[in-house]
Image (cartoon, rainbow, N blue to C red; front, top):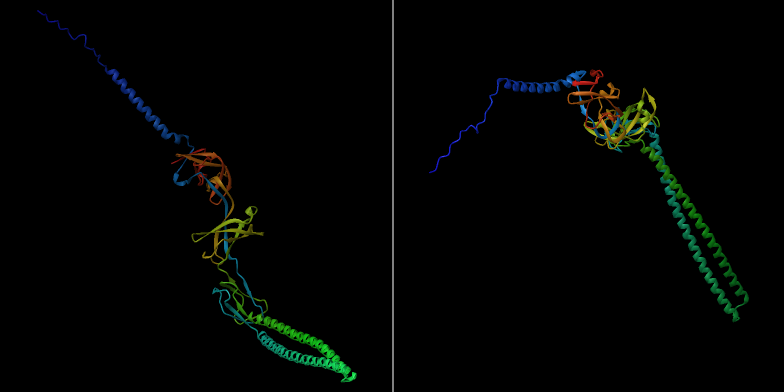
Length: 428
């Protein structure tokens, strides 16, 4: 009979758990509070550390901050100038007389248009006289040619008759020779026939030479008279040119400028009458400070802005004379047609003195003068730090940075006079 084993108690599998005291729980709570307080303190210090390190505080609304960039740099100057027509010829009187004006100042004219006339009765009378003289010598030439042709024809007829007489004399000599051989005629008759032949030969020879010389004389007379006609034609052309010059034509298309005479004024030879301004070819006359004169070496690139349109050109000439601390220069525009420019219009031009690729630059601002180009404030977050820099060329809108700044850094370009040369400034 089987016996039931004895059931053991649970004393061996039970774990005794000690009861935590109230003092232990307080220690943990205090440690947690201390850690939180430390974190808050660190955060608070980080937040107030710029305030503690900054020597001054400036409002961000008063500052202008721009990045340092790398790219093409132009050293240029901005100058004032006035529009000046490159082509504005002055029209002069080429004869004395009384002037009649056909245009007024400001009128638009075309090239070759009649703008004034000069009344000179003497010139018109001289033209009629020369025309009559040409007609007379032309008639004399025509008459001389006819007379010459008639004389040449008569000479040719005379020579022809003398040749016939010579032929007849030669035949008679042959016949008398035959008859003498047959004792039909006497020797005296044959000798008379030979004398007649010799006379005919001599007469034809001398008359041929005379006709040749007379023909040369007639040709010379005709040629001389023809030259006289040509000379008279030149004289007439000269007088006609002077008469045509009494009609003053516009030398170019454009606008009538200043008129120097009044209607029906008596003008002298080579007296200025008016100017005509060519609207298609403008230049810009600029005044440049004398301090830049050593940097000006034409041709230099230049540009002007006219009503939002930018026109390029080049500085073509510099005046060697200095007036009131300035020198004058001329900018020739590459294309001024349709630019809407007006004579004596005032404008601003930019002259590029130097151009450098891959340069480190920052926009130009009052900071440059405040720091004498030697220091700048670099902004990191809300803290601006004074840093020594080295600047190069100064352009109209940019400043070249040679040392002290890196690409992408933020720099205060507005006035830094309120910083009072503090090493660190808090921007709020």
